[in-house]
Amino acid sequence: MTNNIVLPQVEVLSSTPEGTNLKLTIPSDLLYFAGHFPAMPILAGVVQLDWAVHFASVYLNLQELPVLEVQVLKYQNVIEPGAVIELSLVQKSENKFTFHFYSDGDKNHASGRILLGEGI
Image (tube, rainbow, N blue to C red; front, side, top):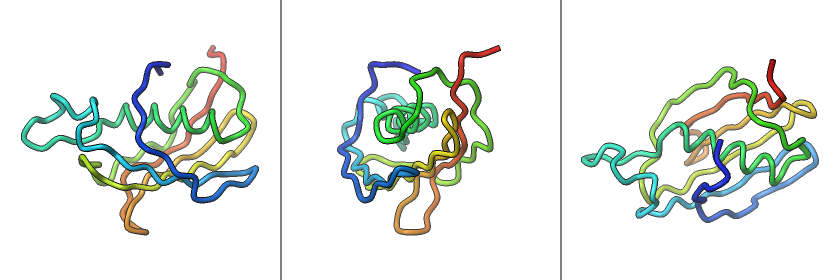
């Protein structure tokens, strides 16, 4: 993952030592929409993963390690320009967390589990 990512507007909805819920407002002119399906721009899955890792490093008590493995990754509904979505992050261990992007209470966009580590 990169250190030079462009981020959406963020509002913390709730935060505990175990997890955080964020509200993300996605600008319509976000750099990542350019060229990603010009007729119907969508937020690429790799950007969603990068945001999950970034926000987990900011809001959860995780070691700063590279992504070792992405587990149970699911993409269900696209994220379009101008969307307002929520991101739930839950720490499972000192180097593992789950993420869930959703909107309108029950519309799932993406979810998964990320394992951080040094590699094999």
